[in-house]
Image 1 (tube, rainbow, N blue to C red):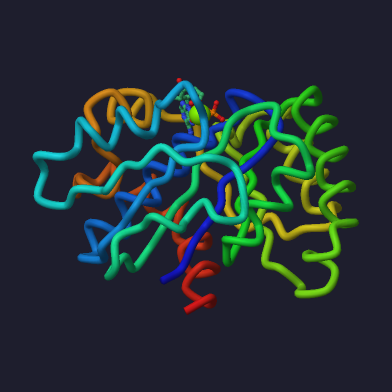
Image 2: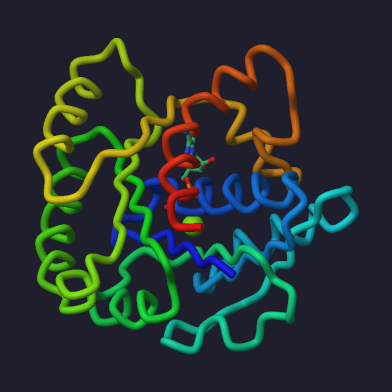
Length: 211
Ligand SMILES: Nc1ncnc2c1ncn2[C@@H]1O[C@H](COP(=O)(O)OP(=O)(O)O)[C@@H](O)[C@H]1O
Ligand SMILES: [Mg+2]
């Protein structure tokens, strides 16, 4: 089993969007997938409930932040995605990392988000688990508008950071609409959807290296 933690102390940066789409990607690829929601708002859990009747369901579970977060997963689970809440403290991230194989951090292209994220990166880089195990951490720029100065500046700044900028997910209403019906980008094959799936390719390749 591989476990991918999605975390950031910032709200609204796309943790649930990344967690649900990633879980759906694995489920549509035929892997038994669980999505553990550590946010009391339960957005990922609700999404998984809406998905239950589809051909590629994802097992949604409420989780408590801690090193044993994956303890109750059914046998045979191949992929586990952990969605976490805004305001998460560095000590809690350290506990979740104990249970995970990689950490993915979405960041919005705005100075407010960049500043908050950079403070988080600095704390993360000091965690013994990350220093010692060279624990894989990927940054994703989310809701990018590639033609804007704000996005271009954010991308340049993230590239200077301590962790690799692995993917850039463009802003799209598709994410908003699909989240509401328990679906994901990976459930569709139109030309437009494919172009947004391409945004994910470098992240999926990076995660594949963990196998
Ligand atoms: N790439 C994107 N394009 C457009 N809307 C997005 C994108 N990513 C997230 N959103 C929207 O932004 C809002 C916050 O995203 P969400 O995933 O809930 O963030 P978080 O879980 O970090 O609070 C939601 O309404 C979501 O649909
Ligand atoms: Mg969320």
